Image: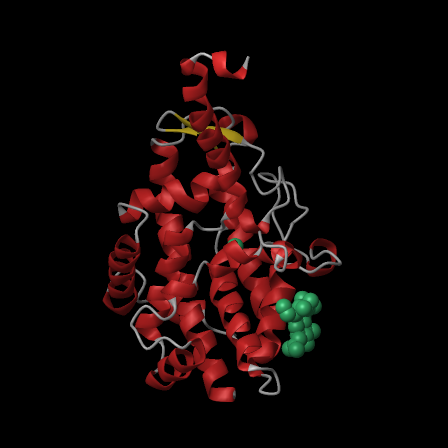
Length: 297
Ligand SMILES: *[C@@H]1O[C@H](CO)[C@@H](O)[C@H](O)[C@H]1NC(C)=O
Ligand SMILES: *[C@@H]1O[C@H](CO)[C@@H](O)[C@H](O)[C@H]1NC(C)=O
Ligand SMILES: [Zn+2]
């Protein structure tokens, strides 16, 4: 009977498979690859010359894309058998109560298996440990570059509905979820696309905003208290700041205000400045973090 299957249903199979892959994709990434690449390019624009040399050598890439090209490696690794243990390192499950109250508490929210805060500490220590092989330190570098991006995404600092993955929304008529649009659709609505070149040009405008524009007066504050020796306290502060946007913007009207709604209009317009700020901030912080490591090692 297989041979008699009408060609129309045969034709549906690849479409259905593609659809399932698209549905599975949201869990795969943090900021989408483009967001991570933008964080990395902003960092590239601000690292000291010695930091650039150090990381280009460690990563074996002398190009200008040495940080951006490894920025989303950790999102592929977490889905491999060898990298499965690292899946929980991409977020911290704040058990708060948005939009009424937000907050992150390390002992309450960082599970026994670790979280983004403990992972940044761990991989920063491993980068500094010259007894480790260069391939282990290369992995540590890729993890740090990635997780300093993830921590800026508000829904990576939230337990509710699996960080919004279980909140169904629409975007320009497409079925997706709240977590996914914060990773990809909203950032791409700002940068104009998902390519590496979109990331590079968005980073250039964020770098200008830090040097001489909107962010000039704030950038110093973004890195005040930054300490690789006290990585846990530093990154808990960043997680707390990022998580606060879950109450003030992401879920400001509660779940009912977003669930099953198309969020490509006013919701996106309100979210865009937050996404730009968080990407710029984490890129600038990543530059200072890598500077501190290159200086200490
Ligand atoms: C630190 O990183 C190593 C290498 O990936 C991993 O095996 C270990 O479980 C991590 N430790 C913590 C506490 O996250
Ligand atoms: C981390 O912050 C806590 C609370 O503010 C403080 O008591 C502790 O000394 C800090 N840890 C380090 C290593 O500075
Ligand atoms: Zn991630």
